[in-house]
Length: 574
Image (cartoon, rainbow, N blue to C red; front, side, top):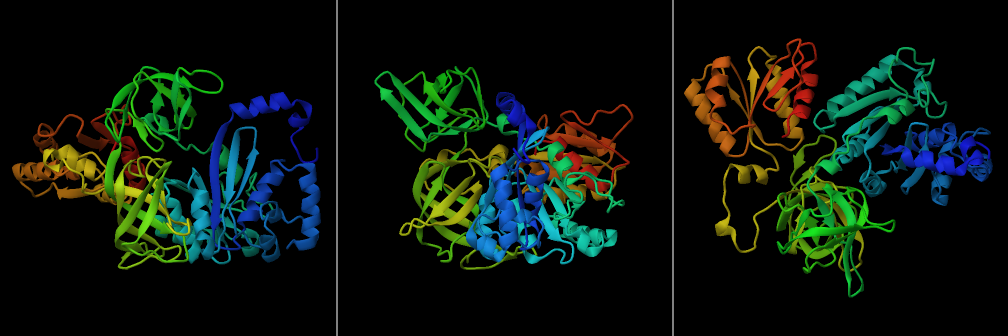
């Protein structure tokens, strides 16, 4: 088997067992047209020896017939499968490929670079954990680079590789690499990425793709493959409240009623309580049924059938959830829409809203603003054209269960469907619920927790030791803003302690995250006025300090302020 793992040929069962035990990483390649996305993935497949003999024969023939590299192998043809793609040398559709190394399995989505196919890029990014954003070293950061970076952030990807490609065409210039990195970091500073890893590469020649290249001695970081194999991408879906949307009610006979679906978040065991979010009816899980037998535990990502101890009415499209931490169940909400259709959005027109297996008529009642993907500024508008992005207010014909997309990508997303043509016209990411039109609002208790929940956050006071860098509170506020949190800084110096405490308490009770930098005396004055766990002290790191424990976070004096801010945000549950 040419260019294929020897283990497959020697012992297929051992190979399958090895694959089963490896972790999986999903990533996409994106960027502007002709930046080399397909060539890069083709090179990864080639060098990881994941090409079968018949594929190799076809690749050699296609390279001679429609390739762009003369008599050499055109790696892009491994991905560009459509005839139109091969004729034009571009990517149109999303191409998914599986490959693996000794350390990890991968599913990569090669997404198109042309603006008219941006909707396909959104599809490819929706399930990815890492984005490899390619930039042509000759052209630098282009409009489509910015568009794809914004969309990457929008769908919740927080780990980005900035692959500056075609370095061979700029003589592997370190200065050119640094200039592009500086421009990109300036643009992406407000996108909320946790990590941007810059790597200089030549996809065609293989420089820094699998191993370090002697052509870039000035670059000391990992190769692309080394990064992908070792990237620490936290998947905390199991740590979130239980969610499962019912896809099918399984009733093969009178003695069995099971509710089938894929667990979107959390962990479930037999005996655990669950609630039907639409009706409020509660029960307990009796069994977790699968094709391979009953389970004692099921986690996010598993497709299972749940049976309950009680006979309660549950239909396809309903959501089962943890009773103590229920999702929102409302008919009005605010969401970001990516418009995917040639016919523009018409506010006031009825569409079909599909969230999981739930389908409901819905209407876009207001386009609040559009987002300029070049400047990231808000712009007024009355409609959304193809590939435009906007923040809208929607009303469904019936309440639906959802979480904020920031909290749960699976239960915070939806699509809009044209009721006449059945075309998918928009992808949506829910930001927050709006005032419900359902009855019962006079009984709502509006307190600090309710105000904070409306902002999808927890009210806190962050007190900064006045010996820390004065930039730190400002950087933390900017980072919180990028994450969609609502915060307010207060000047701790030159303000009376009683006035400072009263103002901070007022903002805290409004559900905000309050930032104060002050003296030990101000900390003593404030601490007793806040709920346990809501007053967070940020201090200098002493030699024996821990990184943080509940109400106390220590900051490394030697780290740059930006790194200090990132460490702080990661350490506190906001």
